[in-house]
Image 1 (spheres, rainbow over the protein chains, first blue to last red):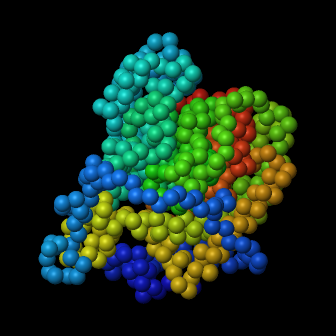
Image 2: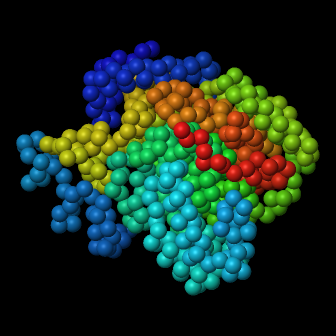
Length: 104
Length: 487
């Protein structure tokens, strides 16, 4: 079950990644080889076997949803890692392409 | 202080007796490692100023004679969050990231007065087995500088192996503590899933990831696990179980212990010298009074396929958070918000990380979920049952950690399938959530061979006892790397 370039492009779009044509060719070959290896699992009889997503029996851990007091120092520390910030907010480019790179 | 000759017990005695201060120990450690690391490239960043200040404060407070780790230098893998100390996961996308909080394990280390000297190199986001996937540098194997140190915790392994620090922390998703420990001749423990908090560990495969200690001896390893283990309210998957003293009774021996040796772990693809070393280790255990018998883990051969589907699926979800908005590097090349996401990720992630994200997205995507993710999750159940069946009759499972000794730098990096196949003996432990230890068990052409001891959930004590007995009966761990082999 070889993977097509179109499938790789579709998955790249889901993953928010872009590839050059050359990269796309290389990824298509490699992903095909790797999924061939994945397909070996089809040999295993898993009839009636429950899928396991976790090794420990998990229970939801809940706590009351109470607002904690705002801490401006904490906010500033967090914003320090933001690529762009202004007036205590994270700044991003326009959602729609307006030809510029500014948020305004 | 020479870390080849002094274990934690000896270092602690020297600190308690005031033969050396923590400040002097830290200063000497930093001076020596700067020299050695020019050859090894194990560190991504040093924490010089703060380490010295911490050591000084510890000296002023006084070394607690009951705390074997007080004033001891330690190195930390760069995917563990350290407040105010850059944490990159060896990725360009986090090149400038300075955490605003400490991982739970860091808080626990600070509470016990350990001194963090630096952050170590790794495969980007812990994806790889050679540390060649780091965006920043290539770490060398101290036993032969033309060889890889293994990975993904290759930096932590190399700096302990080369005697730069006595202790380091690594993380293990599919072998990332045990395999580099094997390649560099040190002791590495992947604890039971849920034993150590993952709060503040940059997530790769959340149902598989575990933090663990990397040391030169089994007893030192147990002493460090004592400190980092335990329930954490910040990590709902940590198990609320009492943490035993892992060093207590470590010298009780293996008489009467039943050890299983899976036939699948010595099969095709395992290097002859590795197989011989493990068979010799089995004889050593018999000599020491244990029973060693052949057992079977029939689904082992499917481990790599199932692991790469599950770990990549979890990774593709976990790594969605890196989008250039709130932290990390944002592309300079964006006209709109979607460009920020796509271009930041495309420019920020390296090829292996992109490959894993793509594999994960594909395995989870509509039309493929049942054939890939669900099938792998079912095979995972069967793999866990394989272990449960063996553990009905045996206390431990032994085998190699990796099919081969360390390979050459550049040898495998272009072929993902060859690289993935090397994980065949280490991934089953993560899939089943079990504890696994790597310890030195021989050499082939000057390169270390690691033995793996696998235990039942939360039976780290049994593993350490057997590891300690083997270590005391052999001399492999006393060998010192040459830092040679460079052209």
